[in-house]
Amino acid sequence: MAVVPLIQTPVGIQQDKTSALTTGRVAGAAALVLATSLALAGCIQAISARFESPEKAVSVTGVLFAAILAAATGAYILRLGRKARPETASLVFLTACSGILLATYFFCTSGYIFFPADILIWAEGDFVNDILKFSKGYPLYTSPLNNDSFHYVPGPQLLTYLLAWMAGKADSIPAYRVIQVVFTAVAAFVGTLCCRRILRMARPEAQAGKGWLWNGFWFAALFLIATNSITNPFSHNLHGDALAQLATIVSYYLLLVYAETRSRLVLAAMALMGPIGFLTKQSLLIWPVFYAGFLAVWGGSWKRAAAFAAAAAGLCGITIAACYAIWGPPFMYWIFYEMYTHPVSPLRSFQHVLDSWAYFAAGLLGGVALLRNKKMPGLTGLWLIWLALIALECYTSGIEWMLNHIGPGCLIAGVWFLTGLTCLDDRARSAGPADMQSWINAGAVTAAVALLFSGMGLVRIPLSPMTPDTYRYVHDIENQFQGRNADQILLDTGTWVYRRDRVIMKDRVTSLSTQASGDVAVDFSGFLSRLAAKRYSRILVRNFHQPDFWYDNAVWPRARGLRQAFLDNYRETGSIPAAIGPRALKKWAEDPHLFGEITILEPKLDPQIDSRK
Image (cartoon, rainbow, N blue to C red; front, side, top):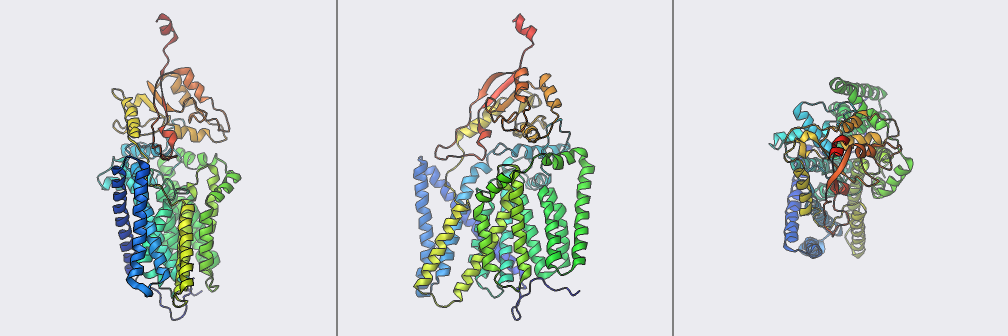
């Protein structure tokens, strides 16, 4: 069977053969957007430091933002006069708006990124713990009786450590978070390349997407989508989300390239994305299935689809077997069985669809704008792959209440939406000279897109989420370790206090609670025996008297009785007050629970000693 491109370009339309030049232009636009946004973030920081009142600082910042938007759009209109196009004026406004929102993101998250302790979300302590294990030569996955492992695959942790080590920051928690932001920036860059390729497939004659302004807008908007507060709130935290999102968008870009070029080299890269994706996040094993399905339906060759499926399955099997050879049965327990014990709630999955409605709408609207040429069945298949991905992500997100599982699908939805917007812009330009109705239409579309930014979770209040009291909270925890061996003190979560002495602590709350929250029997004999033996000279736990105590949560499907084990063997000797966040922010930390009051427990004395006293 003859090998032909899946996406047929019209006769006489020459494809862009200067991909390196195109990539360079995108990189230049991205660099300009980042430099401008970071500089503007510095201005916001200066304004925030100048005014003691948060409301006053936000008001002044708002005036600055309005001036930038008016100046950017006004400068274009005044410069060209009657030759000004409403589509370009709209694009200038949206690009400036995206840059402002990106600067606000950098300002708001800088307090998180440079925070010295790994307690911003539940995953950070285990993320750093895996890095500590690797640097010490300790197995990443051990017996569940130890409660020192978690159900994350090792790719994000190990790659973060490698990059930090190469930068001379191997022991810097802020550096680890900066690397997650870099992963996100690269994901936005690859997403921009996806926009260019889809536009070329759907409308090869389009000129709108070739200028630096569109590239800058695409990159800024996709960076915001990749960090949106609804489905991507952890992209700057120590979690696998940032790298998983990057792996997903790279997987999708490879599919776009193959659909257009039928390159065997690209096909080989696609086969490698199976094991690479698995080492990043278990759910990314779905990509070989998507690839094989696309090849079978739109590839024109069942033999090639079957050969690809066999090769990809073999590579994934070899990868899993290698991990088993390194870590043994504990790897299978944590990576597969432990996740299996958490059933999906269909009702919760449906709620997540409603919560992320803006991204479903964006992807659907983008498809409507781009899939008008029925001679391009391959492009329809590419759009359906996105729809299947985000639907699957919504379903599997029903395991928990968080929506971060849907983040990669939302980024691809943004790609389709922004490309569809570009296609509409190109059609409007080719309709003829601009008149008053054209300006009204452009203004309405601009307002609708700007308002949609809020629905997508791209708008943030320019306030710093951290206060001096959060640092006091960290110092109070560190003081509990002064003059004591770190391996004798159990902190429920957070690994930064153990790194100086290179201690791998057992009985971490995230490891234990993820097992206990499943509806299966779990062996806690190791934990209970260590409490009974008073293995720890001091224990620091959050929310000890609350129903959502992480060692014994009231919402677990089975009562585990672990709180009573604490009470039987330990007594309260003090507490660390909760950290106080900015009063101007309703939610000032990703996980306020981790900044809550800490109860200090110490072993109960022997009853005979108590009676003699």
